[in-house]
Length: 413
Picture: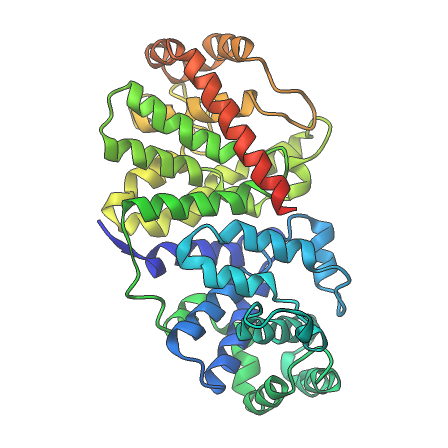
């Protein structure tokens, strides 16, 4: 089955806007503003599409509350790190390469434009910078129509310094009707995407879907050095366990995709909890446990594609156990299929053998012993007997995944 980029990317973008702990609604507001300006100045369909996608993802490189708080100041002191991180997260997926380049320079100051080589800074970056600041200048505690004159004046004052004068003129013109301001607060991502040609001619085959899910995993895992390799490791282990159990090639690929996407719900969790050096309180632990439910909420829209139904099920149920002790649904017995059990084993293996702020990585033999004693009875003793016979290969997979992902993570900083 083939999916268009729109079908696959829309639920991810919507989730980042509505669920992301750090960036609620800011991406959507910025995308609506950028679309209005880009449409007004006559960008073609592909330029407009790239601009809107970039606006809908532009701050994904802001990995901490401190960084987010810095970005919502009127004058951002050091925007480089989160711009570079966002660029690195997306650039390896070919359909997102133009988007990544826009994000890389989305805090470009007009006065600094001449220091860059010709062609380095996309024109959409200038639009995105202005649009981003318009939303930042807006105070959510007051009616937006009461603020329009103040915001317009502030943008005009920085024309030729922070912002391209031609774009400022376009913004002033397009922002005259009240509907411009009303749309910022009320236009949904779905409504916005109905207005543009969302790469309808770009179809995703199986390999591209796998590549896209890998890209999404970076958005999830690169929020912390402690999780930088987690989803990648789970994906590799899940696919390999499927091979051990004689799943066909398509099912192995589905398991990999589920592995890449299984923790996407963590985008709605305070990243400070992931890096907390001590034991989580009961309240904090309960917040973290919400991530598997949020994974289902984010991915459920993909279930409209029959091909994706297994992937969504395996991803959202990766913390369920056959004895009913798992979460969030408390499923048991036949309610849990082999794909869920594989995801459970892959997730636990990866987590135990990774570094954490409160402990060192567990040695392979010790991790396998713990799983045999405590986890396998809650998942499948029989399946774990098969997994155990490949202990050496699994150790090599984990080590290789950790090495490559950690290297990529540190290069992105």
